[in-house]
Length: 633
Image (cartoon, rainbow, N blue to C red; front, side, top):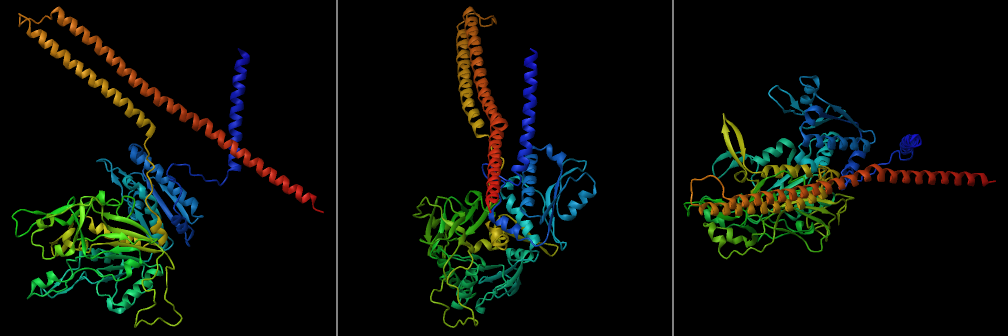
C-alpha cells in the first residue's frame, strides 16, 4: 500500500515537473510563433489590414471602453467582448508598435465615463439607477484627431475587422475625402424653370455634402482632377469623347468610381416642355455610358427594364380607385442584398424604379460581385413598355418569369483595358511627356447601380418643414446604401479589400445533431403516448356508456383493468423516454470526454513533440556549424 502511494506521488511530481519543463521549453522554442487554428481563421487579418498597419507613420492610441461586470451578466455581450478584445490585441501585435491599446472599465459616475462620452463612445442604460454598459472603441492620433465606434453590435460581428481598420485608417488619413460629382440630373439646389422657384437639393446630395468634400465635375470640362479620392457619375448622358477619355484614364490610374446608370431615369429633364407634356414622356431618358462600362467588364442594356412580380410595390393611378402592383417599381429586402459586403450589411429595404440589369462581359477577367438582385419571379421587359405607362396592370399581360435573378447593383474589381485602344480621341492633346494608359496601372475599384431613381427623394424619404427647417423622415435604406458605398470607395484600395468575416460564435454542430436525433425519437414516443391515451379515453367512455347505473362513480372491473393496463403502458413508455434522454446525454458526454482528451492530452503532447523536434534540429544545425568552423584551416 505504501509503495503504491509513493509511486502515485512520484508520478504526480514527475508529471508536474514535465509540465513545467514543457512550459519553459515552449516559452523559448516557440517564442514569436502565431498559429491561427480556428475554423474560419478569425485571428488571421486580411492582407489589406496588414498593409494599412505597416503604412502607419504616426502612433495611434485605441481606447477600449468595456464594462466588465455588467457585460458578464449578458452572455452574448460577454462572449463578443472576449472576441473584440482578442482581435484588438492582434491588431496591436501586428502594428509594429504603432498602435497602442488602452483598456478602460468605466465605473458609474467616474471620470472614465466622461472620457468615453468625450471621445464618442456611448453607454447603453442598464437600469433606472443610471448604470450604463460601455462596449465601444475610440481612437486618437498625434494631431488631436479622434474617431469612435459608439457601440460594438454583436449583430455586426462579421464586419468587426473592417470597422476597426476603418477607424485606424481614418485616424492615419484625417483629411476629408475629396469626391468628384458628375451628374446630368438636377441634384443640387438651384432654379426650377418649371415651377419658377428655387428648389431644394436632393436629400442624398445634402448628406454627401456633410460627410465629404464634394466637388462638381463639369461634363464639358473634358478633365478629371487627379487628386479626387472618388468619382461619382450619375446618369452619364451625352458625354463628349474627351470627357469619356478623361474618366477612362482616371480609372486606369487606380481612381475609384461609383456610377449610376438607368434605362429610364424619371428625373431626366430631356424633352421637358410645359406646353407639350407628351414630349417629355416620349424622350429618351436612358443612360449612355459609351464604351466605358464595357471596357470595365460590365454589360448594361438601356433597352431593358427588370420587372419583378415578387417585389412589385403598389402605386396609385388615376385609372384605378385602389392601388395596383407596378412590376417596375420594386421594394428589395435583405434577401436581395449581398450579406457579406459592408455596403449592404445591415440594410433592410431598398426601393428602385425601372432599374436595368447588369452582367459581366464574357471573357472579362474582373471580379464581378452582385450587391442588389431581383427575386426569381422576374423577367426583362422592353423599356418602351414603361414609357407613357398609364395602367401598370398592363405590365402583367404576357409576363413570364424566367426564374433568374437579375443583378441591379454590382462591385467590380480587377485590371482592365482602356476604352480607347486607338489612343486619345480627336481634339484631345496630352501634356508634354505624358502618354495615355492602355491598361490598369492599379486595379479598378468600381461600383455600378443600374438605377438613378433610387437617389430621388420620393423612393426613400419624406421631407417635412418643422419651424422652417427641413426634417427628413426616412422609410427605406436608399440613403444608407449610397452613403455606405461612398464611405467604402472613399477609402484606400487596402481598406476596400477588407471584407466581412465569419462569426466566431459557432454552434456545436455535432452536439446539435445528436440532440435533433434524440428529439425526433422523443417526439415519436410522445406521439405514441398521446395516441394511446386518446384510445384509452375512448374505451373508458365506451365502457361507461354501457353501464346501467349512469350516476355511479365506481369503475367497473373492466374499466379498472383497462386503466391499470394503461398506467402500466404509460410507465413503460416513460421508461423508454428516459432511456432515450439518457442515451442522448451519454452520447454528448462521450463527445465531451473525447474533446477533453484531445485538448488536455493529445494537443499538448503533439506540440511538445514539435517543440522537441524543432529544438533538436536547431541543436544539430549549431553542432554542424561549429564542426564546419572548427574544420577550417
